[in-house]
Amino acid sequence: MRDLGLCALAHANRHAAYHSMKNEKWADFSVLQAAHAAEILLKARIAQEHPLLIFDKFPPVSGDELSLEDLFEKGRTIEWNDLPARLWATTGIKLSNLSLYREFGKIRNGIQHFAPMLKQPTSKMTLEFIFGVIDPFIHDCWGLYAVDYDEDYEPYVNFISSLVNDEILFLVSGEAARCEQYWNADWAKASRVYREEMSRRIEKARSQP
Image 1 (cartoon, rainbow, N blue to C red):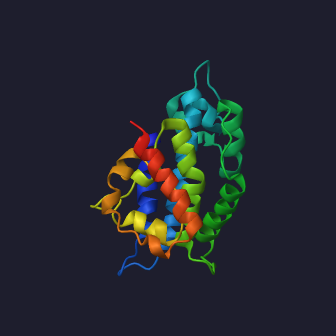
Image 2: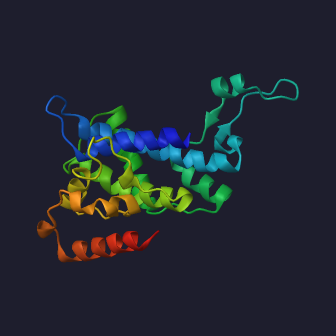
């Protein structure tokens, strides 16, 4: 389950940080994919405590056993708005930026069930959600970094450029720090506060074994 969520995260990063000449909906797709990634990853962490904890409704039990077939066909897993509370109750983990998580869920629902009606580019919203909610979550749970999940054939080179252009703060992995010389980032256009904070994070990543 965790691996599936990380694949969805890489797909969301790809569609949020890049543009397609043939498909104008990449930014909107990125919202759906990032929300999908978050939902799967939260459930993956909850399921580490016990697989049945991700379910909100169980099918009727015949005899003393609950079959996997009945569970998949008739069971219902926890919904988006209830996941943070279940996460805390089962693991003691409090999700970072809970208000952003809930607001992003509304944006996802709007795009999925109605139509995008946003003035601000949805791609930037997606990156803010990924690196404000998913990034600290997967790092706290598994020591992972969202910046490492990108589908570009040149890791970090162009992806980090998009993050810097939008001044998205992100956790820097050791691998990303070792590739810093290849980042195609225009730091001169970023604010001093952003540059200083990212410099601190890069140095911290370099100091780690």
